[in-house]
Image 1: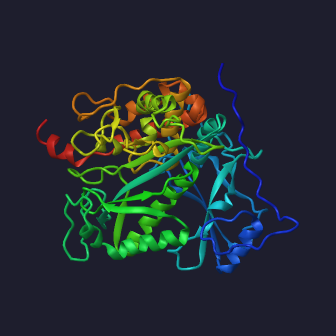
Image 2 (image 1 turned 120 degrees about the vertical axis):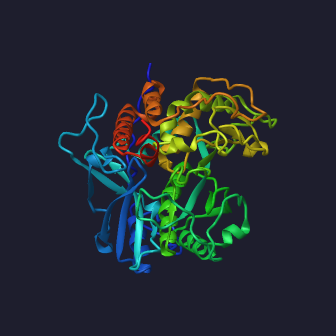
Image 3 (image 1 turned 180 degrees about the vertical axis):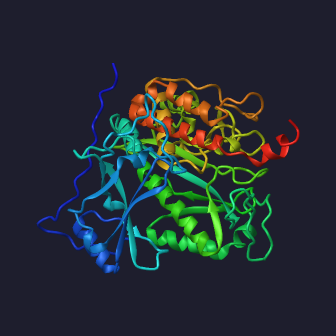
Length: 479
């Protein structure tokens, strides 16, 4: 029998207690009530509020309002069609599983006050808050990204478990260019020279952009976002930011905000920051590696380890689930045509579904650690992925492995990228695999799977209308 669906409803915001403790207005991120929100905003002289929520591409959508209008009684609405347009702003044709809401009725934004923070790059005092999306009856809309992830987490909660994640986000800095037909190039650093590749972990490479990086740190601190480490990656002006481990919703929120933050800091210095999976030909792509573990809610014990410190049955089943299901969910981790240009051999990227201990050529790497820190790193997601959907896909596949008792293959000790490619090689193939996996309706929701697949097909059709320079170069006079 299919698992009984649990309808999630937004939590009511706390109201003023009879005896309220003194408010801590020093917090840079989040409050617990509308009363605290009013005082927090007043203490900072905030004039405007950005009420934002991620669409299926991870783009911030929403409304801005004066601070005086931001109260518990405020009604904020967005059209349902917002979740049915592609990254290029087009609306795909309807199919059996991709339908438009006939009335294009309103969806309601419910501010999550724990995400309230300032917007440090705005000229006027401005704050932002991430919102959940509910329907007219107050039920969470199941196909919105934050709610897809929450539904996956509820599967763990039912078993008394809580996932812990830590994303690593790679991105490129590129010279400004307003012509999409023109290839991207690395920017010039403080030395006045264009940056070249092959500078992994170079401190000098980071220092070429020290003022920009200072702004990233400053903007992050103002928003209460905690950076663990920052390094220079293999590509020219390719950087990586690692976030501290924590709750998946909180970390997805942070990645969502970090992308905004890094772009704004780069623009301040006349540079673009891009999270494209493969922005430059012949250079490594950008990934969003996800470290994952699962702990007991009551005790905090890592369920991936037995009491004697050895790997547990749940650990091996989680890995088995990643191997079995992640190739079918790859379109949630690699969502665009460009994403599959990154997934090529010999480009510091796994093109397999193998796993291994401390083996970076495998899709699923188990870092060397103590029993309490035992975790699985998913190295397949690209930086262009919606963080909410990428985390939902990765954790959902691991959960399916546990509940279905799936055994993994033997760990790979050698180079895993030799031989056949074990992943879909293009967007349409990945979409078909998503739709063909019956278990995903249970984990991600039937409505989400149909909607997301329809959008991806629409984006592919738009892409196919564009004639590339390669076609003009090699087909114009040769065929």
